[in-house]
Image (cartoon, rainbow, N blue to C red; front, side, top):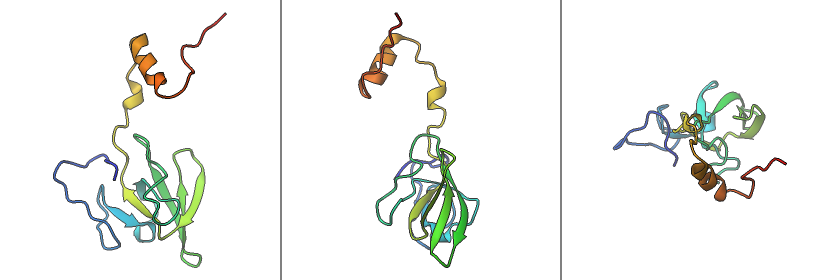
Length: 126
């Protein structure tokens, strides 16, 4: 479960086919209308979400193919992906969207940011 924009403390979150189309609820993609913004989408049924999980990201339901039982998504990268309509998705945009807008301000913050990732900082010229 990932926090989406518009969720609040004490909110009831519903999962399943009969859940309403409100922010934070989890529904199978077959019961989500086209053009809906979703996040935390499963790649395969039951894998608990793998697409559009980063802060401020979302995917859009483009179309449904009822004959094949698939749903076409537009991912945050701009690419299109076809997944099973039985895969679940959470309604809304992942919270924390403006996280990268704030400047790091000092070298120590940059040091700690990249220390947990990989050895790509500092960049030396010369």
